[in-house]
Length: 322
Image (tube, rainbow, N blue to C red; front, side, top):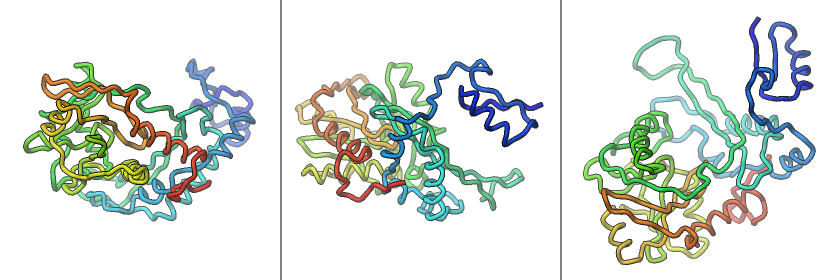
């Protein structure tokens, strides 16, 4: 008999499932399986929190609906189907929405080919799936970043602007080598000169120089077109901060650090939201930052979190009540 381990420690729920499935499977709890994980069971306060906070960033859901250019020869998913399916899934799992500060229900849509054959060609069939998971802060502490000048994440004409698995698979060796040196992630540089700054690991990056927020431009198609990046740019402009989307070299960054005009460095991403960077290393040159003085990044983070938790007015129309 096949054993199914149900993600709960509540025996009552297991008994409920058994009445639906019958005796074909042996269904046990995590505890019975010897898996020691604290699973939050739904309760009144959590359900109340879920009902009050069950909102998602509207820009996120509307923009990343698998219908825009991915650089890959794959079928697109109808935005309406994506949205309706996601809403139903969130409603089904609303009791898993965490009620802790800086926690959220992480939504991850993905798609893969399902043709029953081996070969190098576009698939004619695909499976589109959305999974959810309670999630805490992706980077709980300020980060140390190593500027990469050996490996390359993306090149013009490639698919560096799209969120596909290949971009991540090819980046792991550089990240592991950086970790061996005591760094959390790498800041990618261009493929030709290894001097033009791109993005940090799984995040876009922002530099505040002389109170101007500078982020690498998307023109070459080597940088992920992040929705959080765009949201941060919108908030920065609303704060009265000048924003420049342009090429920026490691040389310009070091010069700004040396003359004390480089004030803040931070990453932006779906999981990370805003991640402060406390150290950058390029070759043997180390740049350190006092993250307690990163006023701009912290204000952006507070605004984003406030909009998500409905404690700050959503003047941008990003929220979509589920």
